[in-house]
Amino acid sequence: MKKPLRVAVTGAAGQICYSLIPRIASGEMFGADQPVILQLLEVPFEKPQQALKGVAMELDDCAFPLLQGIVLADDPMVAFKDADWCLLVGSKPRGPGMERKDLLLDNGKIFVGQGKAIDAVAAENVHVAVVGNPCNTNAWICAMSAPRVAKKNFSAMTRLDQNRAMSQLAAKAGVHSSAVTEAIIWGNHSATQYPDYFNAKINGKLASEVIGDEAWAKDVFIPTVQKRGAAIIDVAGASSRFSAANGLIDHVRSLVSPGSTVHSVAVWSNGDYGIDKDIMASFPVRTTGHGEWEVVKGYDLNGLAKERIALSVKELNEEISVVKEMLGSI
Ligand code: NAX
Image 1 (cartoon, rainbow, N blue to C red):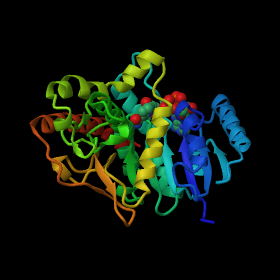
Image 2 (spheres, rainbow, N blue to C red; image 1 turned 180 degrees about the vertical axis):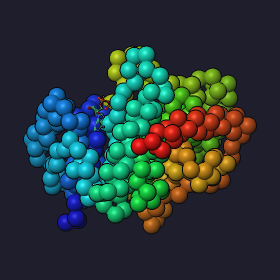
Image 3 (cartoon, rainbow, N blue to C red; image 1 turned 90 degrees about the vertical axis):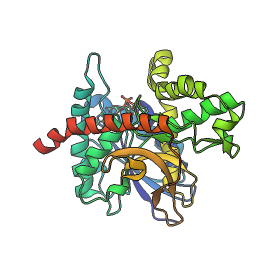
């Protein structure tokens, strides 16, 4: 039997985690032969801590063969102790009348604290995946607060956006979503993201040739993917839950699968494709045979792509400039 992986999950009593945690415990994230120990973090208040106990009781009641232990925590130093993976889902939601800047600063503080705790107690080669919004900049803050950990070990989730893009392209082309590949998301996980119609493929052929409708791409496809999260909130009265959990399962599964196909991940930029260095931006990524990710080179970016990616990069730089001050003062 393999040595169990210690998987820390924050926001563990929240909506996304309710769908996520059983799927990690059942082996869908790390594989059917990989035991796990779940280290679940919630804020130190009675209600979320009680809810967390309920999550643990349900996990017990599943009798998952791969689940080798459960740690319940209200302190990041406990939750991240020796963790091989930290899945940072918990964050403060945007409240009524709250400015984006306030959201950045409030969540920034959480990710400074969690980054420091990861730096202090997590496993030597810990990997960190951030879902809590604004996820790119939260991941950036976390990475900056954990200097011991290699920047390449941090990622933020744009896989849900990719899955949304695949589904929209498939519906337009009248094919199953499994026929769609290389549906790349560039930039920020926000309404400025650039879902790439021109490099996506349908049954191995360029989507732009199969669909052949640039006006649809610009006026329908791109805004639909960019605003899909808000559309779900409008209809369901709650933000994406199991689709976000599913996105994170796909995100980590691809990152730990040597020789994976191209998938979208926000990673620490090395300046590829002219995207500013040292920001967390979404790129096409592939996991090599050695289990390391690399940005896949060679995609052609047309004028529209360059213009839209530049807008998203500008937003990422603005987010970083808001939180940089805070990093200095903590
Ligand atoms: P919930 O409000 O249901 O759950 C969040 C949980 O996090 C709560 O139980 C809360 O107590 C906990 N929490 C807050 N601060 C914490 C801290 N410092 N340490 C540990 N736990 C903490 O939200 P949920 O629907 O689960 O969404 C979680 C996050 O995912 C939100 O930030 C949301 O915006 C983000 N999303 C990101 C997506 C992406 O594609 N990257 C898509 C879905 C989602 O919008």
